[in-house]
Image (cartoon, rainbow, N blue to C red):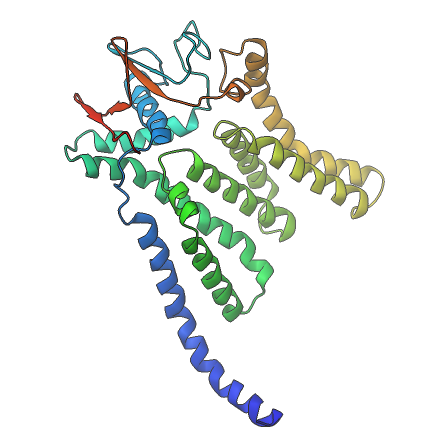
Length: 321
């Protein structure tokens, strides 16, 4: 086929391909949602998820993840008092935001008797917020693809197809754990950052409030991600100040103004950091959770089980989960 005929053939094919893009994008997105939510009630609660579920129940009962209850002890370490606040009996081996978010599913599951339906209700909030985080990640990077709708649609198709292909990612995304929450918070922070610093579509006041709040939540969800974002954003500010901005007072004024959310975030987390380092059994899990929480056990009258109690009765989870 000569070049002229080839160009004419491609020109005739483009409209039909464009018409296929939207249905294909919808189909891939539906395939992702199907893979994520199908059999979400299986295989009941995993061992890692039991930590979130049981402490989320304590949040509903006491307002915070309390270790000792009327009958049971929710605890993840071998030692009797390690990572437990002596004054409040609060568990300090991990950040608490995952427990508070998990209380949504626990509250919904309290009025359900079916074991599988109960498990699904525990996981669905995490799957939903993880999906929202994936959507925010996509929005954050779409502008870098280009302004043409066809390019954005093709990129979105590839994005959701790759997410659907990763079975391990889907399992983590719907697990009753902090994984999906940190995906959502990280995506929201990335979106806020690019909207303000890269594309200039967000006012500084809104950016300041969003970044301060998101960094605080990230610290209290998965603390290792907190210094990563601080360092990455700080490096961008230094590069912008010393290689892009004008010299003199303008540079330092811009650097101080742009870094103010980071400084305020550090100020809000310093009390928790100081308590954790001075008394490892008090704080929000940093650095106390570095010690590790390899196994979670519910001790009932001296016996160790792997059960979680959502209503007035105790529900056993399979040993092979």
